[in-house]
Length: 97
Image (cartoon, rainbow, N blue to C red; front, side, top):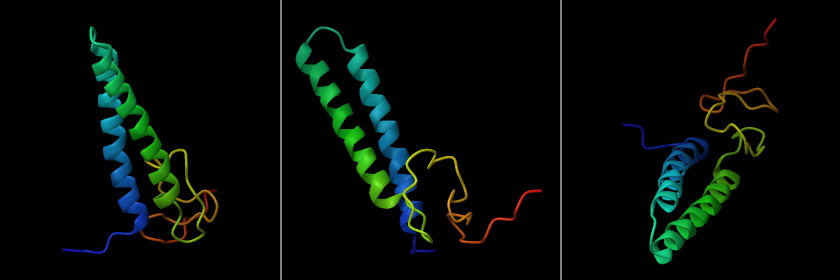
């Protein structure tokens, strides 16, 4: 088993988990009716998770080769927009014709 995981891969996996948790808290904040304390608790948790998502994105989700922070589309892209290298394997992407 490979124990080494790159910072980008670790950040991407952590970002997925935090994003799912954030969506669950946001839905629970909208669904809970009645006590404002419970609604405020879920709203506060949603805000804290959103701040954690931004922190993890800036800290870990950067290209391992050029160091560019990838804020948007980090879960969808495979190559760095700046240096055009694969974010997991590090191989240079082929030019499209």
